[in-house]
Amino acid sequence: MPDFLQLGIRKEINYTLKSLGMVTPTPIQERTIPAVLEGKDVIAKAQTGTGKTLAFVLPILEKIDVQSSDVQALILTPTRELAQQISKEIKRMIENVEGINVLAVYGGQDVEHQLKKLRGAQHIVVATPGRLLDHIRRGTIDLLSVKMFVIDEADQMLLMGFLPEVNKIIDEALSSPQTMLFSATMPHEITTLAQKYLVEPEIIEVKAKKVTVEVIKQVVIETTDRRKQQTLFRLLDEHRPFLAIIFCRTKLRASKLHEALILNGYNSDELHGDLSQAKREKAMKRFREAKTQFLVATDVAARGLDVKGVTHVYNYDIPQDVESYVHRIGRTGRAGGDGVAYTLVAPKDLDFLRMIEKGIQQKLEIQVIKGVSIPDREDYERMGTKKHSGKRSEDRKHTTPITGKKYNRPRSNPTRNKKRSR
Image 1 (tube, rainbow, N blue to C red):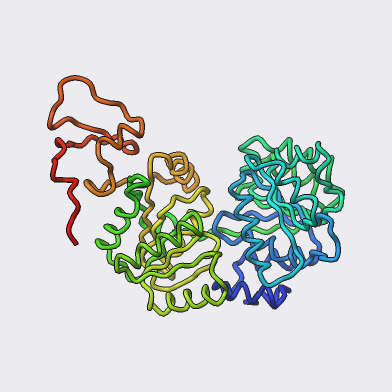
Image 2 (cartoon, one colour):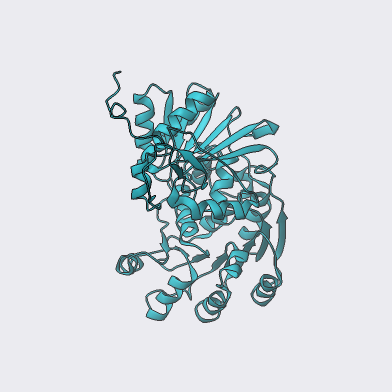
């Protein structure tokens, strides 16, 4: 099997890939990268977790002309979360490459900030359809210079009703670019779109590894933001993993959780974008050698992290898209071994939980650690749960916001809130 250098990826980017633990291309990368470098249009049918993002990002980076300030590549995604994720991935890949600029354009972002960024040289634009059309109509972005165009998660575009916008963008703003279409499924509407705009495309189909259902046990722990840390510590003490990766949403949250783990006597290290490359490599080396038991990481930093012996994954913060969830839990249960993934879910995370369950087509088991992961009655009332009326009772039943299960809550004990001696 060829490595990234043999596929045509420059040594500076290959060095970054190696530092992140990515040495061997995935099947979709092995087949897609040469086709894109040759200038072919591509239709790729691939599930999440197959490495498809780098399959189009890496060859695009190879073809960017840094001497030109024009937008040369457009990546269209259905959600702002995916736009953010792809732009972060690109920025990670160009750490050792000078001159390439990338901008994420999506709704919910300050328009003036985007306009200011667009005045500079932006070689790659990662955008959602609605906000991109807004800029096209304003005349604040010119896509006539785009030579490479990616439609990512095309079937999700269809489900979210974005195909009319995609057609408008192609018809009004683009001028015969090399086009790459990526989709997990190929419904009739997507096939029609491909036939209309792609020229003699290379057809690539890669099946995803079945890591989510058959190998990894997945459990949701109901908790609150206030009790997350206490709940995680209880889980670590009970499970006593050989090696575990703990995922956080942001670099700041990862760093703070790592500090808390160290202060509480856990053998922890951190892996995120605020660390230098040398520190990231050192952290990964210690973890691979089992000198560190717990690795607190962000999604992008842990991309491609393949370590034998990872018995547990903990989603301290729930992933905000299905692809990230599949990627995270796929860090355990490697090489046919058993694996367990625990996701801490607060009431505000319910929409993300439902999205993940729908995406993996599986209902996840929900557990509660009484006295640890669920809050006191007063907290429930602040979260907006119904207050009970009628006569006060010592064994009054309360329901949890996520499971709806009833449990007994005794009257408050005046000694409960005394500080524990250490």
